[in-house]
Length: 209
Ligand code: PRP
Ligand code: URA
Image 1 (cartoon, protein in one colour):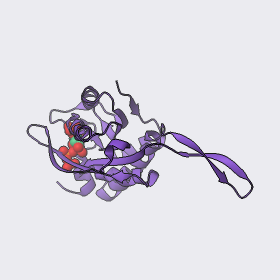
Image 2 (image 1 turned 45 degrees about the vertical axis):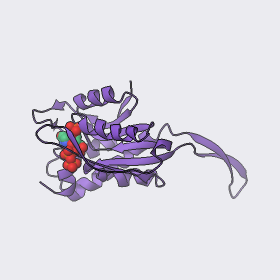
Image 3 (image 1 turned 135 degrees about the vertical axis):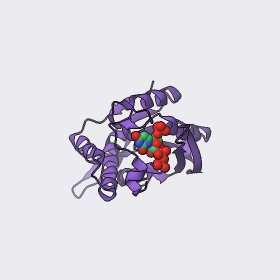
Image 4 (image 1 turned 90 degrees about the vertical axis):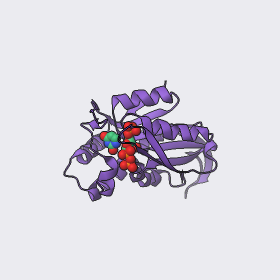
C-alpha cells in the first residue's frame, strides 16, 4: 500500500489556516496556495536520488552531490491544480508541465475529462500530480488512470486538504501512488465537500462562482 505523508511543519499549518478562512480573498489565497505548494515540494522531493560530481571551489577540487536520475513532470489537475504549479516549479525549475482538465459533475460526482496535454516522455519522468483538494478521490484517481494509460509508472499525488474517504479511495485505486497531504480533515459532507475544508478551491483561486 502507498504511504500517506501528512505535513507537520508549522509554516504549513499556519498557511493552511489562512486559506481556510472565508475572509481570505483570491489574491491572498493564490499567494498562499503557491507558497504551500513550494513548502510541500520540499517534502515531496526528499527521496530524490543524488549523484556525486567533482567541482572546484575557489580553494580546491572537491566532490559534491547533485540531483541524479529521472527527470520530473508536474501535472496539475485543472483548474485548481494550476494554483500549485509555480510553487513546485520554483523548487524544480527544469520540470516539464502537463495538464489534465477534469471537473466533478455536480450531480453524479463523477470526474469528466475535458483536456489532456502531457510531455511526450512521461514514462521516463517522476510525475507529481497536483490538486489542492482530495474529496471523494474520483478526480485524482481518474487523472492518474490517464497518466498510467499513457505509460507513466512513477507517480506522486500532492494535495493541500484531503478527506479520509478520498485517501482511502485513491489508495485502493492506485496503491503504488504515495499521497502528500497538507492536512487530513474530518470527513465529506452530504454534498461531497470536505469539512471543515476551505470551500471550492477553484472558485476561491479564480474568484468565480
Ligand atoms: C475540485 C478539486 C478536485 C476535485 C476533488 O475540482 O480541485 O479536482 O474537485 O473532488 P473529488 O476528489 O471528489 O473528485 P472541481 O471539480 O470543482 O473543478 P474545478 O477545479 O474546475 O473547479
Ligand atoms: N472540491 C473542492 O474544491 N472542495 C471540496 O471540498 C471538495 C471538492
